[in-house]
Amino acid sequence: MNIKRYKLIVSAFFYTSFTSLNLVQVSIAAQTTLQSNTGASVLSECQNLPRAQGLTALQQDLDTRCTHIASNLNGSTGSTNTNTPGLSDTELEGALQQVATEEASAAGTVSTRTTYHQTGNIVNRLSSLRRSDKVLGGGAGDDTGEIGTGFDKASVFVNGVIGTVDKNQTDREDGFEMDSQGIIIGADYRPTSDTVVGVALGYNRFDSDFESNSAGSVLGGSLEADSTNLSIYGSKYMGDIYVDGVLGFGKSDYDLDRVIRYPGVDRVAKGSTDGKQFAASIGVGMNKQQGTITYGPYGRVHYQDIDIDGYAESGALGMNMTVNDQQIKSTKSVMGIHASKSTSQSFGVLSPHINAEWHHEFEDDARQISSYFTVDPNQTVFISSTDRPDRDYFTLDGGVSVVHTNGIQSFVNASVLLGQKHIDSSYGVTAGVRVEF
Image (cartoon, rainbow, N blue to C red; front, top):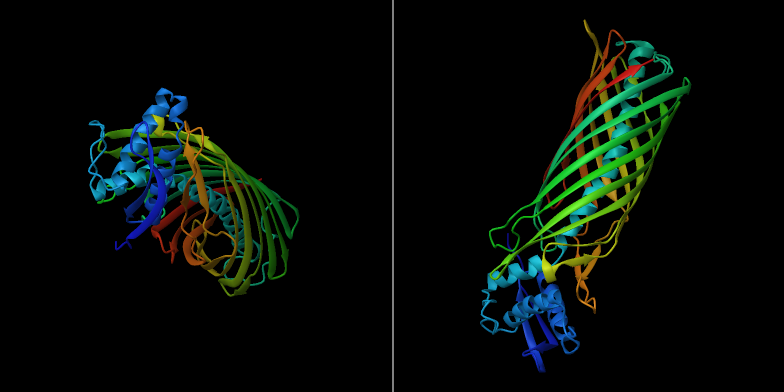
């Protein structure tokens, strides 16, 4: 990957001995804006530590590591401390990358995906209900069935979800591979033949490994997250037109390991925190039927508001960071088209289906994540900026559902995300069963 090389000239007080401060011109050579910004904060950190008042053991450790990096930023071959060797340009860039807390942005990625996909799964659930209603209301090959006339009033369902995402490294964020598994359990009820209301509880587990790169600026680390979501939903049929609504509330727990490894340092900073999510979605669509084929356009608007609590790391001595709160807001529109075909089989009615969607983001701009060394009494701020999210991307999904002769419905669905700049691949598979009573 070709990365533009930045040079930042900083006028700063640089600590050159334990008894004097000199004003010097510091030239920071770094590959990325993140590394340059981190270098500037390290210099400020070294300047402002209150050495005259005496330092604790952890502050002394921070002073040693700070001075080590700053002396290399200043162009010397190494610190006067023999335990802190000089750094090559590549090692210095790696040290700056690893001091920064850009890994914290992955928690926001997990939260937005969890909330958005939970809502999407409920929307797909309502779509599945409509397909089955057409089958039971009129039968395969009959275009006169009324939605809502086939099923009993109440039903329960269980869905299993798995997914994988491969995100590329950028100037601002680390690359990672993320695997997810989840389950959704819910129940819905028909107060009238043209209305459905329901509630669902979802749980998702995410395991993400940060990818090491050839330059050595990223050397692993991980993020694990557990998310629980409660969704309340409903749908209203008006002939061929339908309106869907979903409200979602969630909570997530995060455990993050940040690797700090360069000559003279080999540590893992561990952080744990939690967050909460709110989501709302409203959509409208049309179901047209021609023989055994059902098709139509649809659209919806999705809003989410996510708060992730700040946290203090442990395990890295004076290099532990305190990461401040994060807030993420997003408003998306989705425009799509669906099609399905029903055929009668000996075991029931088989309905393959396909959906194509265009997603547009209105609100979620790049975020800034602020942090500081936990033992720094001045709380010198380090800033990591996230990538700006893609404004437009696409999803394709398809699968098959079966209404069995005993009335039980089962389905399997696969999806792929297309057109996101920094996502190399993103796939998901959902399977489930529904029982009426």
